[in-house]
Amino acid sequence: MSIQSKLATGIIAVICAAAASMPVQAVDLTATEITSVNGRVEVKKTDDALFKKLHSNLKLAGPLKRLDGGDKVRTYEKSGAEMALKETCVLAVKEQSIFEVPQVLGQAAMQQLTAQQGTILFKVVSGSNFQVQTADVIAGVKGTLFEVDIVDNFVSMIETPALQIGTITPGATNINVYKGEVELTHRETGRKRKLQAGEGLAALSSPLMKLDSIFSEGFTPMRKFNPVALLTQNFGSGVTSLLNIDASLSGLTSLPGLGNFNNSLGSNRLTGMFGGVSDKIQKLVGGFDRGRDYIEGAKELSEAFGPGFRADFSKYRPENRGFMVTDSRYKEVYLGNKSFAACKAGAGSKSAKFEPIDEGVQLTEGNAMFRVCRFKNADTDIEFLASHYVNGKQLVTTVDVIKGELYGRIPGSLEHFRIPANEPQSFVYSTDTGKGSLMRSSAGALEDSLKDYNFSVAAKLAEEKGQHDQQSNQKKKQVGEKILNKVKIKKFW
Image (cartoon, rainbow, N blue to C red; front, side):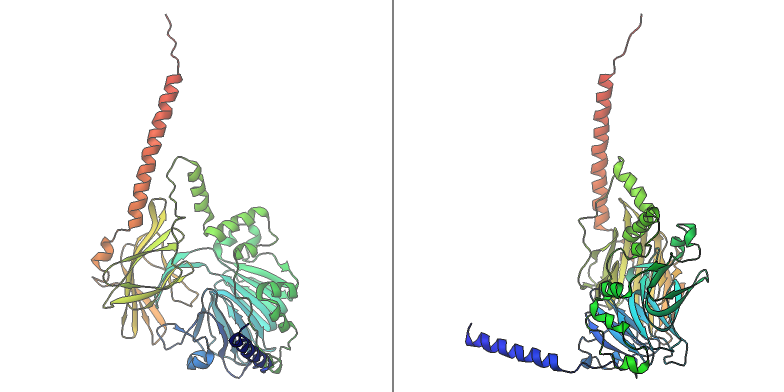
């Protein structure tokens, strides 16, 4: 080893030793703030129009890491965050999560943290009357350690700063209690359940409730588990110390933080929520989990074994990094789930920026327009046009549904609404109020080039289908001729 290498190794060893000996900063519960970030984490302040990326070095994050009631926090793929809510709780937030900070914090008031999707681990101060609300359930807790895992019932194909545009799918909220007690109230049925340490179950959305009569009250059967084992499996061994931390305010204040907990959501989450039920239901739920539509999946499976054309989408890959578009031409991208989008900058923007999200793309900068279609073989079952532009303190997203059922939702909220078809609608979001309304759009809200755009993938699928049909007809003709040649006609005199 050279002198330079030895010197470098010695310096690294000194730095590591110094870092190891530095005191770990305790959690500060006198304020509501993000205390640790890993990867891409964004915050939307109530007076901001957009989510803003949080600097990975929180010392450089400025006021963005300090949170107020109504602020929204979002984590992306392979990302996570740790937070403290003033005098209330500490949170570990996994990847692909979105939630809203309660308006009022502290031990004296009723709290409601609204979570749209993802997984969050809570360690709550004893005596806090704290609630977590999802699309499926309200969880009321008192001095406890528990996990909320939300499989969203909304698939966002296109997301603008004002609106998520997509389809509805079966969803559920899974709750695991590691310490203490949680009382659950199903938002649709009003039925209640109480969970103690080592118990868990899932609150289901309407489509899943119809799978079997045992789900009529909105819950799966209760599951029993070992708190240490499951906590280690879901978040890592470093988090198990929370089981031994006193749930008092002083006990949590002495907490040295959660460290590098496991951020991954894992796969087949929906199927895992149905542990202990019959194999038949497991298979149905597995269909929802993989394709989110087992009925259509069964139809397509039968088509695959029949003579009909079967489109192959395996050669297409979704975007895996951010990209830009200009106002001069459309960029065609694959969204996944047999869906495609043609994107272009618009309404005075020379360019626009996009980021891939779980099942679509998100507009992060500039004004833009889109044409989106979802294929079923060579035909489409969902197709729509959309545009987005900023008008002062108003964010305007216009949508024209050409085919299928389409829904909208404000990013971070729980409620969605159906977007009417066959007449362009504009969703106008006010950055002053944080609210939006749907109204008939004005003439010319969508450019003619968007209406006239033809997907190259549609032409390719049509060509493939034509070739398949031609070959199929030729094969049928050959088989028919072969059968006829084998037929012997008997003549009777």
